[in-house]
Amino acid sequence: MTIKLTYWSIRGLGEPIRHLLRYQNQEWEDNTPTTHREYLSQRDQDDLPFGNLPFIQDGDKKITQSITIMRYLGRKFGLFPEYPEDLVFCEIVEQEIYDLRNRLTAACYDPYKRMGPFPGSEVGVFDHEYLKGSLRKRLTERVKKFDKTLTKTFLLGDSPVYVDFLLFEYLDQLRLFLPEAFEGSTNVLSYIVRFKELPNLKPWFESEEYNRGNYINAPHAVWNGKD
Ligand SMILES: N[C@@H](CCC(=O)N[C@@H](CS)C(=O)NCC(=O)O)C(=O)O
Figure 1 (cartoon, rainbow, N blue to C red):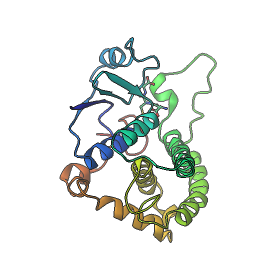
Figure 2: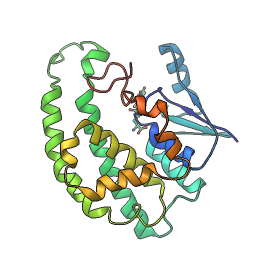
Figure 3: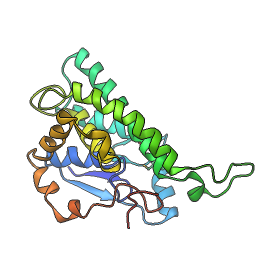
Figure 4: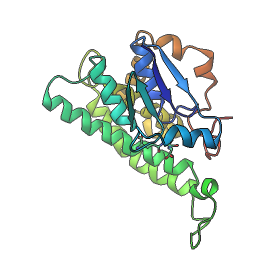
């Protein structure tokens, strides 16, 4: 059965989901709202108690929150850690990479640009270069920790689990933003290369659509906004 993914037509928080579905050779349909009204009507459905994007529909199940979606798909497709201690480790890594990815988002989007000035707000406080510098410092320290962690082919062993799909995508987004933070971290860099060689994913990473790039963020982002 086809899975429906409702999200913007960007990598954003949706791409780990797409990578996992590609790897599984699972048919899916990208459902992209094209107007604000459509976006709200997709998001605010009665059976989505905390409507947000991305969300997936799998049969009669509708699921929001990108990490919950990844865990759900991981369980569905047998890409879930078997042992409790492995799961704890995966969840730590999952949250760690999500924290870094949130900092990337904060550095890329001026909140006032999209939402307009609020009464009493500090318009003009957004400082891309400052936030980028602060992320550079944190990332340089964190990438070294990932380098010590990524000693196997994938996070837990020879084959990927759901967290690898998050980890690859957000490491790759961060690497494109701040390549200097990854210098010398050979385990991380070779992990990124290895992921791109996975069955079913290799053709995607060699495709024209992927190599055109420039679509990590929404159009109003300061960096890598979709044309
Ligand atoms: N914690 C949520 C964050 C979702 C989120 O911020 N989604 C953005 C796009 S990346 C959005 O446009 N959400 C729509 C909304 O908040 O109305 C997740 O991981 O799914």
